[in-house]
Image (cartoon, rainbow, N blue to C red):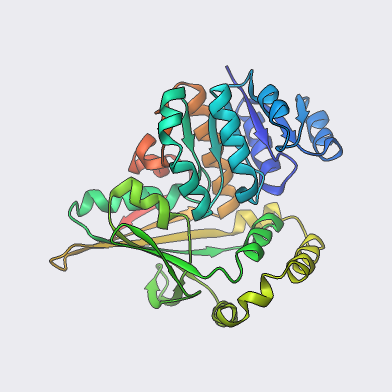
Length: 350
C-alpha cells in the first residue's frame, strides 16, 4: 500500500512533502480544513483530498478509518496534534508529524500505553525537528555510554517559513527549557550562552527550548540536556528582551498583529534558497569523570531535509517498519538513519 493521509497539505512544508511523496511513487490523500486551499494542489497532482475540522470527532474518524498512516504537517501542533493522535488511537492509525514543540512531544509520550494497546506507533518529529539531532544524540550515546550530560546545537543557514514564524510568535514570553536530572526545567529565554565551532570557526549560540530537550531523554536516557542555536547578535538581544516583554508579547492583539505581518511575507524559502542553504549540527556528551565525545553533522537546508526524512519515514511505516507506542526517530530506525540521506556527513571530533 502506498496511500497515507497528509493533514496540512496546503502549508509550505506540506506541499513540499506532497510533491516529493508523489515523485517517490506514494499516493498521499491531501487533507485540511479548507477545500479552497487543498483542492488546487490535489487537482494538479491527480490526488484525492478530504476536508474536515479537527473539532469534529466523527469527521476525523471517518477520514482516518481507511488509511494506515497520517502525517500531520499542520502547525501549530499544540492545536492539531491532540485531536489527530486521539483519532489515530480510536482508528488504529499510525501517527507522524513534523513538530518541534516540547509540550507536544511530552503530551504524545504520555499516550504510549494506549498506543501499544492499539498496536500503532506515535512518532512525532520526523522532520528537521528532530531527526538529525535525535540521531546525533543517539550516536553520541554509543560513543560515551555513561554520559550524564548532553549538549546539542545547530546553525541553520537559511530562511524560515510562515508556519515556523507563527509557532515562534506563539512561543514568545514562555521562556526556555532544559532538562535537569531527568526533569524538564524552565529557564529564562536565551538563558545560557556558549561559543561553538560548527566547522568554520566559533560562533555564539544560546539555549532554546528545542524538541530534543524532550525527545533525546527518551532516546538516550541522558538526564541533563541543553540545546543551543546560533543566531546573529540582534536576534540574541531580542530573545533576552522577551524575558521582560513576555507578558506584552503574549497579549492576543500583539500576537494577532505579528501573525498578520507574517502572512504578508512569502510562504518560505525559494527552491534556489533551499538548494543554497545548509544546516549544521553539533553535539557533545560528558560523563561524571569529565570524559567527553563530540560530533558534528552537516546536512541539507532544514526544509529540504524535513521533506526527505518525512517521506522516508512514511515509506518505512507503510512497509511495516514500526514499533507500537511513542517513539523517537533513532529508537525506531537507529542512530545512522540520518546518514541514509544525500548531503549528510557525520564527523567525530574527538
